[in-house]
Every structure is written in C-alpha cells, then in structure tokens.
Image (cartoon, rainbow over all chains, first blue to last red; front, top):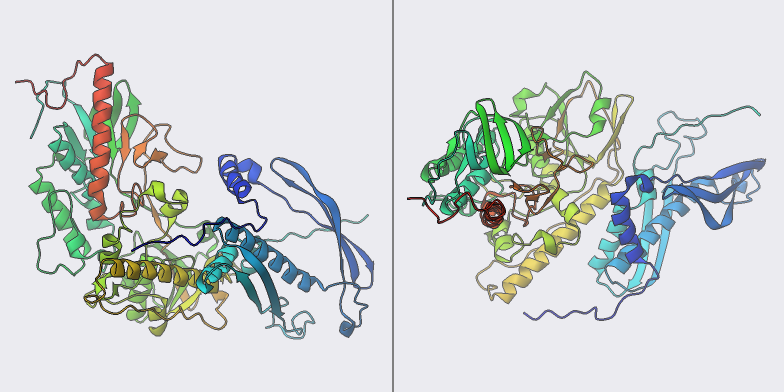
Length: 191
Length: 435
C-alpha cells in the first residue's frame, strides 16, 4: 500500500505551537512557574449594571500585564426591568467557553497541521428562571445544560474535525470550570 | 548453559531479580542463557500476585495463543480462550520449573541500597551484595485511589479493585464503580449481573471490540505492528504510559464489553467523579466528550486495521469491515448521586501503580515515579520490567516481556562487562568459565 501524505504544505493558523510545546516542557520541569492566578475586578455602577476590568495576572513566577486593559459591561436585559447596558453575566460564561474552545481548536489544528479557514460557534445555555427567583427549590440557579455547535471549514475530514473539537474540550480550562465543581470562597469587608 | 563458576563470598551474586512473575522469570531465563549468575527473589510463591491480588472472575485481556514467554508457548487446546488468574499462575509456575529458575520464594525484600560495586539487597531471610538489580515486582502493586475518596461519608464502604474479589464482599445495595478501563467495566458488568444497581463513573477510556473481522482484536493489533510500537516513536510518551487499559474482557463468548453493552444491562453511565459534597457524589459534565473521544479513536484504529488487511490482501478471508454504533450517552447524564441509603459502596477502579518503597536510591522524580529510560533506571546497574509502555505498547503484557527482556539483558551484560573492565577485570565474565 502506498501512503500519500496530503499535508505537504504547512498549515498556518497563527498559533505558535512550538512555543506551547516548549512551555509544556519548561513548566513540567518547573511546576512553580506553572502556578497562575487570573484576576478580574468589578465595580457596581447603577441598578444591575456593573463594569469589570481585566489588566494584570500572575504567572511564570512573576506579575504579568495584558498589552492593554480590557473592560466589560454587564447588566440584565430590559425584560428583567433593567437597562441592558451590557451582556448578562451568564452570557459572558458562554463567551468564555466559546473563546476557550475556539482557541483550543486553533492550537490543536496547528499541532496536527490542519489549515483552518473558518471556525464559527453558536452556544446555548438553558436555564429555568424559577431557580434564581427562589420559586422552586428543586431547580438549580445555573444552566441546566449547555449546547455548543461548531461549523468549521478546514482541510480535514469530518472525523478529523470532530477530533479537533473533542481534543479542545479535553484541554479546555473553561469547559472544566463549567463541567466540574469548583470551590469558591466569597468574602466581604466594610470600607 | 552456565558460563561461570568463579568462587565468591556467600551472599554475593552478580544480579538480583526482584519478583518471580512473568517478567522476572523471563529475565532469569535470558540471563541464564547468557551465563549471568543471578537469583530471583519472591516474597510469596511464584506468580504471587496472580494467586493473591486478583478478583475471582478475572481473565487475561489477551487470548491464550498470545500468552508466551521466552522458550514457552501456550500448549493447551483452547488457543482462542483467555486464562483465569489461577491458570496464569500455573503457566508462570510451570515456566519457573521448566527454566529451572533460581528462585528463592517466601523471601521479602526489605531494602535495596546502592553500595560499592553495586547494590545491597536486604531480605527477611538475609542480605545479598550484587552488581545489578532488576525490578520485576510488577506494575500493579498498589491501587491508585483519587484524593476525593477522603471526602466520602464514613458510612460508605470503599473498596479498591486491588482488594475486590467478588460482589458478595460489598454491602447490599447500589454500587458506584469509579473508572472505565477494563477493570471498571468488568466489575460493573459482574455487579450488575449479581443484581446490583450499578452507577459507572466514566472518564477518558479506550474502547475496543473483542473480535473484529472474525479475529480477536489483539490479533490485528499484533499483526499490524501496533503492539510493537516503540515508546520512542510516540508523540507524548508520558501520556502513552498513562493510557488506561482498553475496555476488554476475556470470556467464553468472546463478547464485546463496552459502555453500550453495560447500559443495555441496566448500568447507569455518568461522568468522571469530580467531587463529593453534602454526601453526594458529583460527576463531571464531560461524559459526552470522553465518549466522543473514545469513539473517534476506536474508528481510527479500525481504519488502520482495515488498511492493514487490504494491504496484506486479506480482504477475502477476513469478515467484512464494520463500524459500531456511537456510545449512547443519556440525554441528560446524571450529575449527582446521593450516597448512603441506596448506594452503600464505592469501588475504585482508578488504576494501579508499582511500589518500590524498599528502594532507597535517588531514582524517583518529584511525583515519586521511577526515573528510567525504557527500563534502564537512572542509577547504574538498575533495571525495571513490566511497566505499561516501558519500551513498547505490549510491554506490560505477558507476551510483551520477551523483547524487552532481551534488550535490557543485553544492556545489563554490557554494564557488567564495562564495570569488570573498569575494575581491572578481576572478575571473569561471560564465556570465561574457570575450569
């Protein structure tokens, strides 16, 4: 049987996979550097409207900064009698999941030498409002399920694309954070 | 052939092999053929763990025709069957006899320490100075139990697959089986057959049909070279060594045991055990993805087998190619399971690991794992055998011992020769029998 290699050219999805593989090796050897702390700060503005700011984080044994600071407005929609100055917080969870899975797909595709042309995701999170309204003890506050659908145009078979998406979920931080319990500590102090 | 008769002090031997299981005895046989003086130390009887550390219904994952060691093949009348643990023990014990292996049974090693010229091996029946040590004490000495076990309510009985023997050991009522390797699936199947309500927590797993295109899947994996794949040719060796054992069972019916079969039997499939809170087991929402990963990987393997069959011109004699239904995941997999009244026991099928608590040498990494390069441990004259993917995919299987043992024995002999030369050749070696 003659094996032909269809991938004589090199895919370029704009992901520096060599850097990622180098980081894997380096962080395996020095686990202290692998300790990261991600941070956000937020401030109430008015009503249900608040603004979050992202600028610094800790990792590789030192304080790090984003190239610039990013701001996100969050609010509730008008159907909740709010003024809708931004996405609802639960929508931002979906945004985080999409960002994480899509970045993973690009990185895995790069590593597997698969050229991507278009990667589009739609996400749906189902929720029974009676949970957060306290109207039903059996109903949870959060999503009762999340559906993500990807439409991907790439130099790959349907199975190879499915494998990209599956591998991305396996390595996704946000997928893990949503799929598994996380211990959360919330404290407050009077100023 | 025994190539040496140099006089040496009592308690001195060139090589100590620790463990008289299939690996240690295979090494003994090859060392004997090379004329290397050695001793095999065994804490119990030959094939001890096969006699004392296996559940009652366990059978090998490989068919009898594959069960072979250097110089000994399966001779029985059921080549397509699968040996029970006592049958494996007898096979290995027979090998010890036929190879006249120099085994000291009922001799427990209490410490191995580097010393001048090699190692000091201390046992409960005296000590030995030797020039090299082969660790062949097995890959499955201890159960790996995740830390979440500590959070289980005290009223819940916990059992590891290492100590589990049969369903009657577990208190009446439902059982949560954690882990979806061969072990977890076999135990979930057996408990469901015994009438238990079984919940199976499923993380990453490897799905395989028992028989494909008319032959045992192991036949195709062997013939196509998959089992001979070398660790140095693998992208991520660390990961390859951690891959759980494939979902297989050795039964008379040669039936496939997968998650779909278990669901038909009434076993409830849930995600990986992610935590315990308020007396409830919490499961990961990743079930769909781990099943998708396993299904995709299964199909890639079957594609490779089909390509091999075509390439070999075997399409006419093999049964037609098949693809199996995707793993059926419940529409909304359960995320919580109250422990206590209905579910009274948890069975950990979360893996095994070797134990070298008696080895006192700087050969462990920060996670406590033995540092070695394909069996050559990170200390001169120290070798290890039988670990998953030690040198090849087949390394932890009985039939996988032979190639590894031959290569590591050659390395070991090279080490002894180099040491002899360095020390001015005061010790005769290989082929230099003193008349």
